[in-house]
Length: 242
Image 1 (cartoon, rainbow, N blue to C red):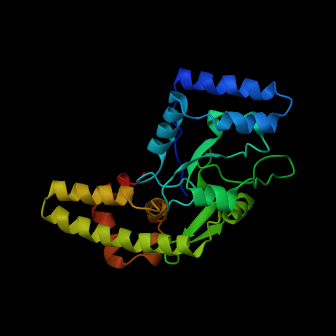
Image 2: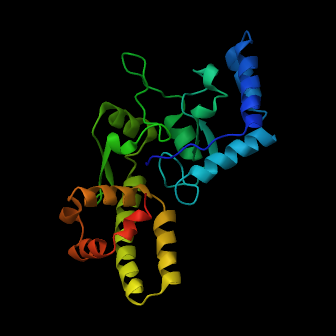
Image 3: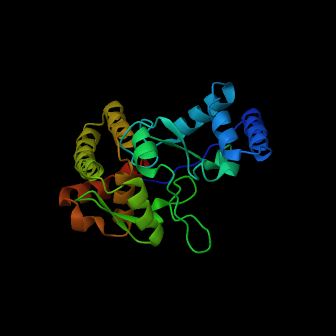
């Protein structure tokens, strides 16, 4: 899980969303009307919404929660069955895989005593403020209550995800070594392929955590010495992972 920037939406699409929000607000049965209107998404506005969210995903359109599977569903961060007033709110949309959306998060949305969300919104929050990552095991370790709830609700402690993040760390180390070898041969095109591989692999948050730990001097504890040495000599590797 990583921070993702929300792009701007066209005035046309925002107007469509506002119109539908008004129809829901004026309805006697808001939940029913919300679901009826949500089923009517075959138009240019929702095509734009889907494309804008897809272009913001990490890697090759990875789920904004697990970063493993392809992001396929427009996800309501605040569930539309509970928060009908946010069903057509652009700021409430993320893109998730069907597994995270339908099997894990569903309509779960814990709040604190003051009514604030206890889940991390990767388009509003920096997950690194609430989650640490063990690179050697692929496990997220919560550093806040929001981190605890996000791991639980999003299922970020699934074994398949922990294995994937651990493998992504091994792949990152291998790519760093390959990058160093290619740079010695001054093959710019091939070096670019390594850059692309680091940017587009699943679990791209792994390279961001590696960068954080490198800058704070922690990476040398868990990374092979040759990897740390290469990073010292090639700081531009981390420039591509921000």
